[in-house]
Image (cartoon, rainbow, N blue to C red; front, side, top):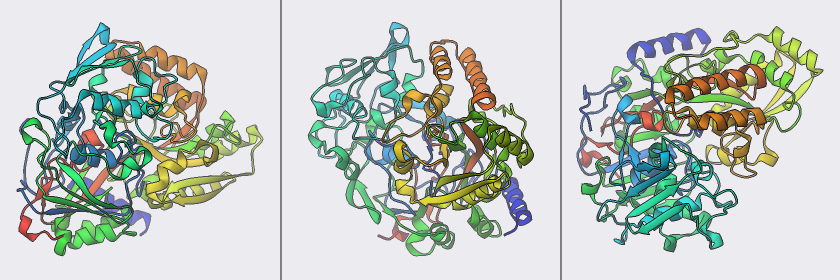
Length: 586
């Protein structure tokens, strides 16, 4: 399909969809493609932002999830990519606080989950207390205790349980040298004076700690169920579903957790009786099966999202287009440059890459302007009040001549580098390859299976020269963005998640620490914007590529589907179900 055709298709989608800006909460950290109770509008089938597709579900039946990938991690101490966070926290385990299950901007608002409220701060925001609701139980009927939440938070410090959110490590007092509960030690900064109370003592005031408590880190894990790295395959349920079987890379089956109390849960509706995740599908199989919606596929949704090449298969069919759910992600895709070694340890070479990359080609490779837009800063507009900062003013197609000048000045005119991308991003990798070839840089593109992508990039000793990956704020605050992708103190030897550039700069870290002390939100937001601009114009640790939009398909028998902005536009698993359970199979 040529570029003109792609642009026409994308324009048609843009006219068909009203895609609103979402303040996202997660890491996309997207597993980038193959690697996002007030009254709501229910206008019927359609993908318009803020609406629910398919109408209202009813109880029963089997919902099928079709995907080309296995889960990277389901262990709540390690689960920090989409769509795994949405799947885990909505279906298998609950957290102290969670996002509302509503379309549009309301999805970024938080409500109590296991806790009775969203937390009670004291000591100027350095201490936070939560009280658990009455009658909470695990899948075997045993009570959920505050000490179980403490235990899982402590697990997030374990060097063997890599890949999970770093907030506890960054925020909790006395955790600098802590290695997790398997050492036999516990963190004094987490108190559990009784079975229903948990108190967190922080290094510094954190005004948004309530939002932090939405993360899987703050789900309960009973010590008796500890299985180390094997806990990934069978997390113990505190949510509406429990794992019935899990054949990795092939199929995961969830069934109802009879001990989940709907009366204590204002968010999850648990409509289906069973949820079957069919894994390992290739290429465009997922989209094609849901477009056709035959048999069990009529009761299916996809994970993670629709492939760009499927767009022309959807638009000409009004009934299929009506089954496409879309939401802006609030995430930024970057081209990360490994600054720990040559040639990208040289700022001049990194600056050259800023000018060399054709970002417009990235958007085209992703499906056109309806599915993405050129990123001109690291922070997405969802964190800057809708403003699209553009400090370098580089054309969307790049400036190869300027890039050549910078490379010549750096004495690097004949470079050979490697680029690693998730399997579904091969086309985008080839677009980078073509961009850099114009300035004399030879790029070898390596693809990695989506289920292994984050772990591959997280191995810092063997990290590639270049990588395409995304980052989403875990909640609408600049504190959840730049510190995770450019703070040198977050780099880990294994399980490195955000700072894929391995960027270490003392002045940057000092400024991050200064901003963290600001209690005025507006002042902090301005400071994060200024730091973003300084990184873009002075240090060049990565090339911002694109701000994605999610496009997801549902089968003809699926109801209650919408993209939740709290999960970067992913279909909210808390309220999805079927129109007619008798038509489902499996």
